[in-house]
Amino acid sequence: MIPFRSVTARLSVYVAIAQVAGYVVTHVCVHILGAFGVIPGGPEYWNDLAFPKIHALAAASVTRVPDGILRLDPTPELRASMELMPSLRIAIIDPRTAAELPGSSPELVSRIKAKDGVRPISLSYRIDGEAGTDFKGALVMTNTRHGALEIATYGYASSWRDFPYWMYVAGLGDIRYHLIEIVIVAIIGWVTLKRGLSPLDALVGQTRLIDLVSLDRRLSLSTAPSEIRPLVASLNEALERLDDDIKRQRRFLANAAHELRTPVAILTERLNHPEEAGFIGDMKRDARRIRSIVEQLLASARLQGRPEAATSVDLAEVARAAVDDYALLALKSRRHLALETPPASVVVVGDRQALESIICNLIDNALRAEPEGGTVLVRVDCDATITVIDHGDGVAAADHELIFEPFWRKTDTKPGAGLGLAIVKELMETHGGGVILEATPGGGATFKLSFAAADID
Image 1 (tube, rainbow, N blue to C red):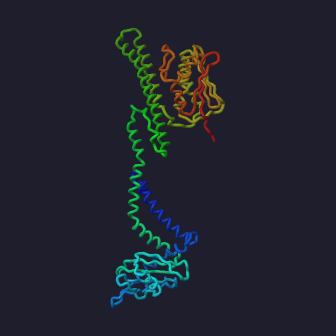
Image 2 (image 1 turned 90 degrees about the horizontal axis):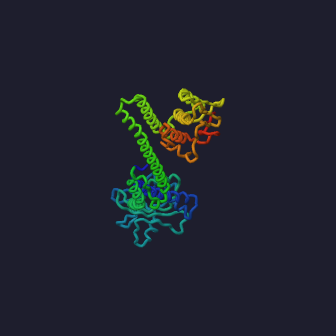
Image 3 (image 1 turned 45 degrees about the horizontal axis):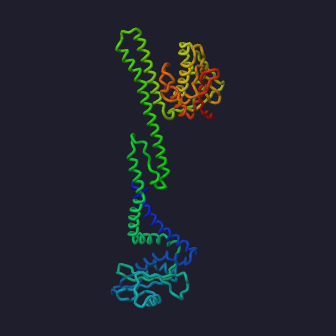
């Protein structure tokens, strides 16, 4: 990984690396394909692999005899290469005197000197009439330990053993000669990429204008590059969801403040008249009402989102526990509770506390609606559904959706904060289930909870 935080810097470096890699890989492929005759003139390219090593051995073979004259005295390694390549010829010319060094190939010298005074710095050539059409020669001005000399080689042939050395020499040479090109390409890449990524700067400017007060703002899709439009669209969708959540929380807080204002005002007024009859009872009733509202608010806030402790839960056990909790309250209010469960367990995945809260809220709501002497039925079915049935006044069709809104109440004459059914709906959605309201035959309301049954191995 390139250690740059800037995308522009990373891409610029990657472009430079790709340029170097492309150059090297192209040359390697050309020589390899040449070895197998895949490309025209391939053997000539293949034999180029031997040139760096032969050229270096020739330069190392230049010696100075005691009388000060330079001569070509092949080193043992060069002699071994000449034995392996009988066609190999070497000639070295001193550019200051235009004379060949003793030991040079006379035939190659005569060919080279036919240039009629032309002194190339680097030259590739082929000798006409020579046997072996795959051979190619090179004449390069080279700095040796004895000064600058023209070293000519011809007739070298490559083998796979030459490949590593060729890679080493050619790689160093190419990087050195192309370094300026690489730097210029990186700089141009930086400038062009910086300009090309300017739409991202515009998006950054747009995001800085978004806060809790301006969540209705959205990022512009028209100015975003096509590659990141899906990301911008996803961000806009996330902002939409966040805006909805914030609005819902604001409504929730406003309604909570409104609901608490009235009982607190009543409680304050009662405290100003402690001498009135029934003062203690009224105080307890007001305290219970405030506590009920606060507990419902806390439950709604605590259980928002997905259940934190999702486990396998038996719906029959949860329903039985909820009915047991409300049994005494039902008797005191002169009502009855009945429970029907299947013989086998009905297991779902969820939070047990949240599921108990769901059923308890429905039972509490049903007991308030059930006439005195009536029976609220809680039924658990094998298809992972729970039904809570009361026989009260029922719910008008126009109110079927409203009853699940926080703090909604048909009338203020009945107790309650209007949060129970809202909590039921929210918790059922977090469990991947749903709640359906139906009319009870003969009058009343039937709430049906549907869950996804757990897979039991």
